[in-house]
Image (tube, rainbow, N blue to C red; front, side):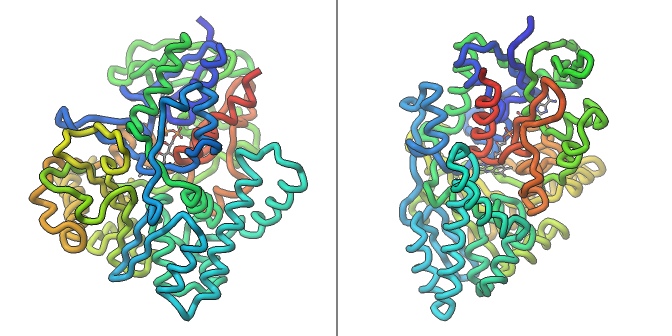
Length: 506
Ligand SMILES: Cc1cc2nc3c(=O)[nH]c(=O)nc-3n(C[C@H](O)[C@H](O)[C@H](O)COP(=O)(O)OP(=O)(O)OC[C@H]3O[C@@H](n4cnc5c(N)ncnc54)[C@H](O)[C@@H]3O)c2cc1C
């Protein structure tokens, strides 16, 4: 059988595209190497009762007139998939060596809170936050939802953006003489980029900060429900989602890409050919290009494909029993902690030196984020701790010395739990019913992400600027559709799928 669209990978960008196309009556087949759909948004169950989402914690742009709302309306499931908005007083809670900053949705309130902490820097802090707000507005005006905005408006946005397109967050902090402690509090959500202020693109940072300022959300029933709803739409419309089918090659007829070859992921046997009018690659574009042969791509696409991967991460998935985390201040927000004020140094210590004695990390409580969460028994609450980790270190340890690999996992977990016990939840260890750690090699094994990368291509100015890869491959019949060929994150990848749908729908 020949399909209209063959989608390689069931990550959020691929599934979004496939659901929209199926809904439109096109024949669609999705090939997924893993046994679950969703890529980094997949859900897994441990010990038969604790259900964790691999990587999603909080998302933005899910209000009615925002892109995710529009996407769900286009699929006819807006009423079925609802979202809970995070705490209006603080959707993020930054904690750094005795200093606290709770991040509200309102920029002016944020300025007030910053000025309370740093009264002698009121002018610089207010100017900085207003630049963030203006840049966020320009990003929205230029990109995604407003692509059809009048030319003059888009040009104005473009001019605003181009000014900072090559800047890191640190460079902008320095331009505004932001005091070091304020820098730390403002940039403490660094795990959302897996980069410190010295490396992260200012525009990437603004896109996320401004996104959450417009509303931070969780899916009321769970991210699993969201992913399953997309799969259902594909299947109800006659499409197929085939699991455990790993793509190992592409099929060409002359210069046109006309399909892909898959094999059983576990046995590496049972090779099948799948043909389609359009092949949409949701897995890493660089890996696909290497499979195909880089020489087949134009020089400009080759240049865009020459990206570095975003650093990998360590995540501890924990089930807490006999304890109500809301009594310790947790709820519909994410906590960010650092044990070292200088975030650039804290990051280097963990990532480059592998030293987690003074960790900086995110604390997420998924079962408190969603009102209809049913991912664990009622007496259990979920707690997840996320920080950066170097792929090569874990890869080598796992290969050379499995015991040392397990010791390193335990060491990172212990150092984060020591902080939790001391600062946030005394006796947390006594209440841990279950804990499992995900490392860079876990990402590689279950999400097939090269070098266990977190966000696809690295979110530095070099990769988040004008030279960023998009759906264009320069090969007839082949399109990229993933975080590195569009934008990462829940909304970033859904918009990437929507955008490709708009291009190919006729
Ligand atoms: C630590 C961490 C925390 C995050 N937290 C958030 C958050 O709170 N909010 C948010 O919005 N975003 C978050 N993200 C980002 C978000 O999860 C990702 O950007 C997004 O899910 C990526 O989607 P994607 O479509 O690019 O594909 P991926 O998720 O990369 O999926 C690609 C799919 O392709 C499959 N595949 C790979 N190779 C093959 C092959 N050869 N054949 C067949 N299939 C293949 C994979 O198994 C996978 O299912 C987080 C990411 C990380 C790492």
